[in-house]
Length: 192
Image 1 (cartoon, helix red, strand yellow):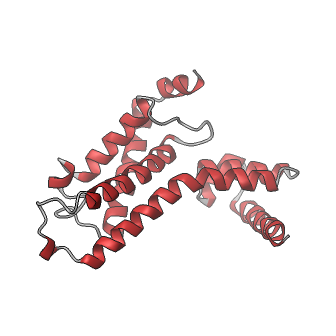
Image 2: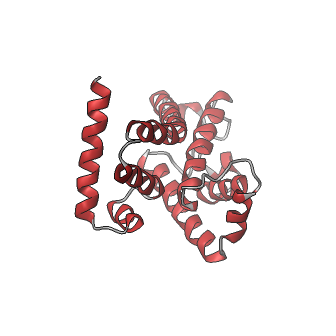
């Protein structure tokens, strides 16, 4: 019920901003990972439209239709990006499981690129699953340190120094000190 209330409470402007962030992230990932919008898994032919729009719309729909659950401490854009990681990994996996659909001739598609794309898909999937697990592990390790728990909660919502500082009501210098303390404590715990 709480999740539905948060979904219903998002203003059109908040949704527009989150969707804008999601679209920029999806476009950046496709280009940065050297996928093409003209051929391969993110082509118009494979996606049935412009990949950035199709993926973004599907992510928003997945959240608002209850396919995914919005984590209470996550910003809307963070949740949508996490959904995108999962969806994009499935798109690449499905594309290659189908044996590179006929709209891309195999001679034009490098076999090494196929391996790279499968590896990227696995990384996106891992990132989508591990983000929350990593925070949960870190929270257990620093349970006795309220300022580090607050830092983790702020970092979970926004992983930029400015965003963390704003969420904690502090400055960037304090944020950097907390980060250093957190990393030192986690390294010490991991060495045990």
